Amino acid sequence: MKHGHDLGGIIAFAHREEEWAARLAAVVDEHFLPALEEFDLDFDDLTEIFGEDLPWTLWGCAFEDFLSRRWEPDGPTVVDVYLKRRGWSEKVLNRAYIEGLRDAHVSLHEVSDVVPGQSMALRDLLTGGEPVTVREKSATRSLKQWDRIVARVVPVRGSVAQIS
Image 1 (cartoon, rainbow, N blue to C red):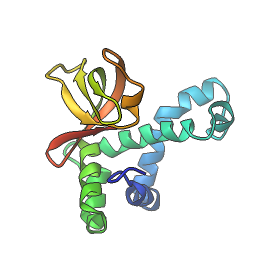
Image 2: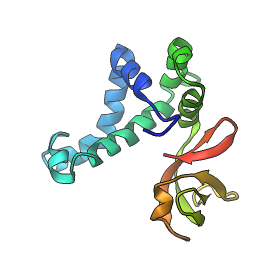
Image 3: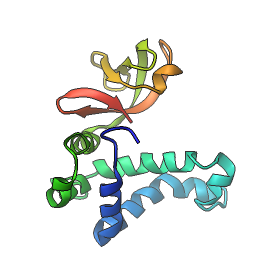
């Protein structure tokens, strides 16, 4: 796992705490149930169709959505509650990444200035603004100028650092 990307603590917290477990299940259902019901499948069937990794990558997208949700006006996110109770147990960079995920949104980005194995610039096509440079190793090996990707640009410790 990438340095600063260990979500194991907050995943365990979300499954262990009854209130948050129910909310996580609801978000995962929002992401998966329509398609699963349409094709009469269970989540476990997705491994046979797509292989071992893709279903869990999709689950991760749903989990990131869950991390950013407020469940009542001005209410806390699961990230707020988790970091208040267990934040002391997280490494500084990991804590910053979790906070960044909470505040980031998914959008459509146009790719430019690719430095394979290092970085790329992304311009948000939905909200506009200037391109931001993000550090990214694997995706920059296959992406090229003018490609478009859906991603969550995650600010870490005051700078745009990574995509998810």
